[in-house]
Every structure is written in C-alpha cells, then in structure tokens.
Figure (spheres, one colour):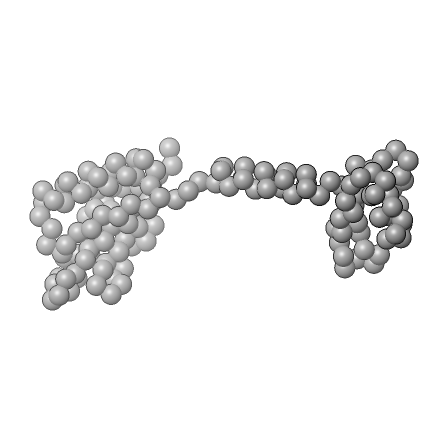
Length: 152
C-alpha cells in the first residue's frame, strides 16, 4: 500500500510518520528488534479485520472431536450389552469417538477381569467400525477404553 510518490527504503521515524499521515494510513511496526526497526504503512483496522476473518475461517474448517460415552457394569447382561453395542456402532458411524468404560461400584472391583473381557469383546465386535485408540486401562473405579471411528 505504498503510494506512488513514496519509494520503498530506509526512512527516519518522523519521515515515515509523515508519509503515513499523508496517505491517511497507520505506521505499523513489523519487527521492532531489527536494526533499524522495520515498519509498514497500512490500514491497521483493515489488517486486524482480515486477520480475524482468516482465523475464523481456519477455525470453522477444523474438525471438532465429539466423544460419546457408553457405560457398562462388570456383570452387564447380554441384552443390555447388545443394546449398548448398537448405540456404539451408530456413534462410530456418525464419526464420533467412543469412550467405553466399566464402572465398578463398591466391592465389584474384584471383577476387574470380567470388565476387561467385556471391553475387549466390544473392541473386537466393533473392529469394522473403528479401531482401538487406547486399550482398557483401570483408572480408579473405572476401566476405560477409547475407540476412534475408521475414516470413510
């Protein structure tokens, strides 16, 4: 945005300010640590507006990760398991990540192995819809496993 009568080059700060005033634009410091400091004559408000516009466009293009949760008990019945598996398939087909966990209440923590078997069975049955991102891991009273959807 340099005017026709202004040549690109090294100018003093006052001279550069005069040029900016003449063009009714702003003098923006690009690199203050350089010797001499680098400045540019531009419409600063327009620059900030375009920068925000670019950031917003980039943000809208970014994919948002949705995590859906499915909770099991260590002694989950087959019918309940099939019902929850059906939901898990739907979540993975919709492109959401799946967080499947077995919640151990009270003394049911003694059935850790049953919880792990349940989650591994789920992972095996959902193999065509998604891949296991994190194997079953015990965290406190929960055994958690993550499954990511397969790309279409």
